[in-house]
Image (cartoon, rainbow, N blue to C red):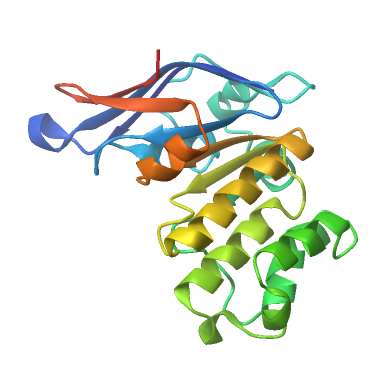
Length: 233
């Protein structure tokens, strides 16, 4: 599903402001869900943005996603933005910490937007299932401003997976949820990833949830110049 090598992202300049995020190697198969863990400020969100093609890496050896085996590193190197935009819209699902919902659309239209942009039917059985499990059905006609933080986060998750991407990237998806709701969302992410043969990378500070679901981890180690991310042995 995903093979990546020698990813480096540099933020800031100078001896005190420069921070390098380094991922030597990563492989994910269909159905895999990996938790990204590490101290605050180590670059977990930066790593996720680079994997989501939202950041231009400073260096990248190889990045292959899906059965087409297209090397995204080559597309990034030549800055083929049209090809990268197509991959972002079809192959990737991104769940931001702030949700990123459009305030002028209701919950139903926020969720259906990525499907409509791809020419897919506005909804699907899996979208209905996710909305039911997460208690969103009574909220479908409301706009984000009328929702609680937790409701917005649950809506953002369904939108991120609505078009059934190959890779789901989630940045602290349970941060705004109470423990019970966080457990339900984590379980739903894992079940959908396996059901849809997706792969998922989830930044999480909630070690209890990560342990409860037995997720393998990509762990950040602080170095003199930044952070190095490697799978847990």
